[in-house]
Length: 304
Image 1 (cartoon, rainbow, N blue to C red):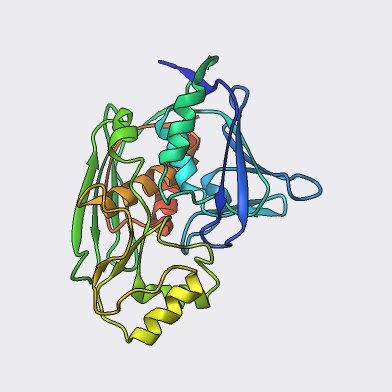
Image 2: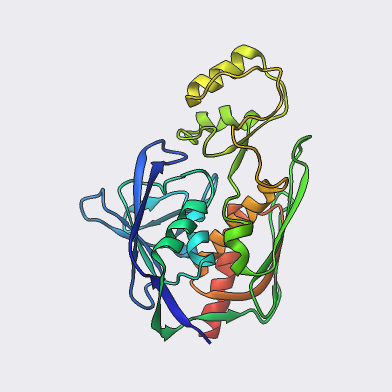
């Protein structure tokens, strides 16, 4: 057995929110034993708190959204993945807005700051959950996740899109201790074809070429691509030049699959326990990830 861990000091990060476009500061604090991950909306009069728990997830369309005590926080998955993978069990996070800062679209800065301030071992034993049977969840669009018994937490992920540039990709993480080097810097991604519909639905108001991999594979008329560039506040581009539009090249050829693996770690962090399980996922996404997390919580409650 091992003991619970919290941060050895506080740190803050600041950037736009991916969907709201607001500039938001998140401050991560040490927290007492059995505290878990709790968000505090310091911009609201009563400073309501939200427990980061699978049962408090209320939306999964383009990120994981939690709600409690009349307050919401969106896009929490990258921060949750960093905390969980870096071994933090207890943390209080102050936010002065309704969304976690997107930073560069990955979990790297969260990891860097956790490494900088260090960790503190606490007196209470950690809550481990040994998965004693397979959990199998299927989605409505071919998604499939199997959680199997294992002696440690590991993941194998396959993503599949109707795309010439991004068809099938695989990623794996055989030991959570490798997260910082193998997964943390994998960025979120979006297809150009999806940008206009997302903007119309009120999403990605803070999206730009510095916080997401942008995949451009179907040529648009120049005026339409110019309109999207102007709307997102990024430089206009030659509509005949297909490919990845970012200034920073891909870190790995399978960076998109690695990011989906990052996401599922963040969503499973909301189970409130350290998992000993192997997760095999085909086409994972926040909706099916949360269904798996809720099933794990049900199993945990039965074993308490």
